[in-house]
Length: 162
Image 1 (cartoon, rainbow, N blue to C red):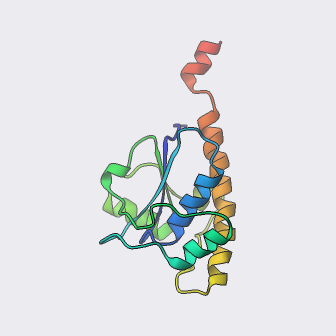
Image 2: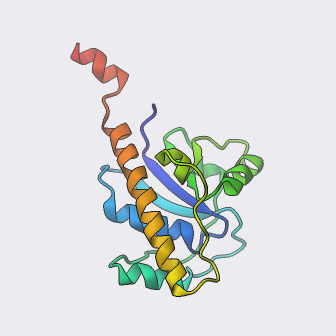
């Protein structure tokens, strides 16, 4: 399996779910050199991140950096880049809009689960806190899998060791 040098979390507008996943991953990442960022499929212009999302993260000791949305672009796809969406609809939309899309999975699919990550948009702060609990679980499983993939010796190294 290919090693990943870049991880992009994607949601529709890059205002809540994907930036929260990015922030959590940056906090727990053990893979040296892994670039972690987030993007949105539909970003017409930069907007500030959702204030409830930033508040819930802050109460957990996590600060969101670069507080505005950014669009997903064709240049974001590469063999060493892992793209994780929050749900199956976003994954499908990526394949419809980007002919060069590779290594695209839902976060649950990549981490070994099934289903979609809930969208807390419009809910009370408690709903955002529940989302953070959920995303912590899936990001931790994702981090473990990436760490294992990137820590495994590649075929060339294994041949030289024999």
